[in-house]
Image 1 (cartoon, rainbow, N blue to C red):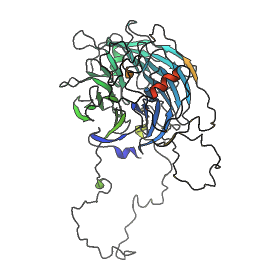
Image 2 (cartoon, rainbow, N blue to C red):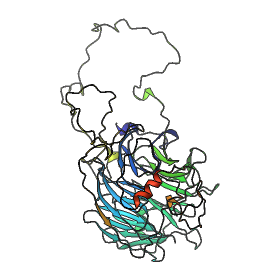
Image 3 (cartoon, rainbow, N blue to C red):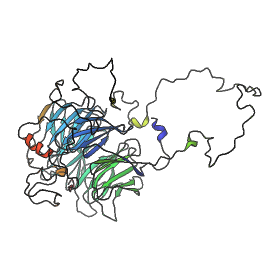
Amino acid sequence: MNLELLESFGQNYPEEADGTLDCISMALTCTFNRWGTLLAVGCNDGRIVIWDFLTRGIAKIISAHIHPVCSLCWSRDGHKLVSASTDNIVSQWDVLSGDCDQRFRFPSPILKVQYHPRDQNRVLVCPMKSAPVMLTLSDSKHVVLPVDDDSDLNVVASFDRRGEYIYTGNAKGKILVLKTDTQDLVASFRVTTGTSNTTAIKSIEFARKGSCFLINTADRIIRVYDGREILTCGRDGEPEPMQKLQDLVNRTPWKKCCFSGDGEYIVAGSARQHALYIWEKSIGNLVKILHGTRGELLLDVAWHPVRPIIASISSGVVSIWAQNQVENWSAFAPDFKELDENVEYEERESEFDIEDEDKSEPEQTGADAAEDEEVDVTSVDPIAAFCSSDEELEDSRALLYLPIAPEVEDPEENPYGPPPDAVPGSLPDEGLGPDKKRPSSSDGPQAPRKKPKTTNIELQGVPNDEVHPLLGVKGDGKSKKKQAGRPKGSKGKDKDSPFKPKLYKGDRGSLPLEGAAKGKVQAELGQPLTAGGAISELL
């Protein structure tokens, strides 16, 4: 598809709902690849569903984790995915084969994982109640990033657009800018609420184009800064935000914020309801509010990298928001006229003649004279939307699409196919519907898969009994919100979760579970999903 033809001269943000993507199981988080051709969705049963966004069909299903997937990130070339689940596991996946390359086990829950924008050998991990950790995948080593205050370990972190710096923010409003290679402090500032009061940093997001980034804080204000100004101010600087975005009427807290693909708009998802607020970055004015189903809670928001399309998740379903496409045929043929009613057409006398005898031969001048000039139809110009400002060519290794095996109902005998007695145990996971049975280990022998290497990450002074915010708070009776439908007398951190893995008839094969976790997870799988349960916010 020619992206240059999609450039609209009007507003460049979505205006209405454009359908949903049903992942069979409950969706929790989603992310686009760098080109917007594939959408990875993490589900509550541990699966990663990869959608082909052009056809709006499932291209691949990876049975990644046993527990819910809470964070996802694509590598730059699209061949790898890194995922985190609520059982403190971080895994890297090969997208084409669906195999796990590496696995890391952390002592506390993972809030966010992010690939280095230019080096897919490095991954930034934000564990709960711990300083951020940078993993090096090639040698399974890790580096704990320095923090401003050792007593305040509620830290969020993010790479900047090109990965040269890491920005971290804590619960006291302090932002540190660290050099990625050396972890040296190059700049810092504090986010204040007008007076000397500070506010907790909830998330830091960077635009795909330009040097701008936003900070979502606990005081319900989204502040937009210019990264160049931050570096110029240096340590303990006092930069002024370019924009302050907020909902002055309802004082809405924000669950997730992100930039548009061109960096000109900012979308923020409400933490109270399924509502998306869109601002124009340059002016700071609110241009659109998109309302989803009343009573639903928003979990995640992602803006398409090159088109005015937003994907949002609520109640386990991915909603797509896009522009209303109006057919304008005159844009393709300038002399095209749309008629309100039938008009009698008068044909010219020579209109249907094979050769027009009366036509005069024009003299060939200028461009017409060079008719025999060779036209280059083989070379392809790089698409500007797919190239960074410091790149001239597209990535030739990029994985834009996934091959899908077609499903044939009642196929006739195929002389080129496998013999009838072949075991259908090595079928891929692509294109499986809710009624199709995924081959499991009990269906027959399969090619043995290489067991991924698991590395335990030891972090000093990190509590081991933390519960991921998706799963609610610890069962100590101090919960702010009471979980809906919780059975009396149930104890433990996993039983009061609204995100129980959901069983579908004939859909999921047997899972290889180890030790005491086997009975526990099977007990969880047997319980129905309570979608109406309360979802605690990320602090």
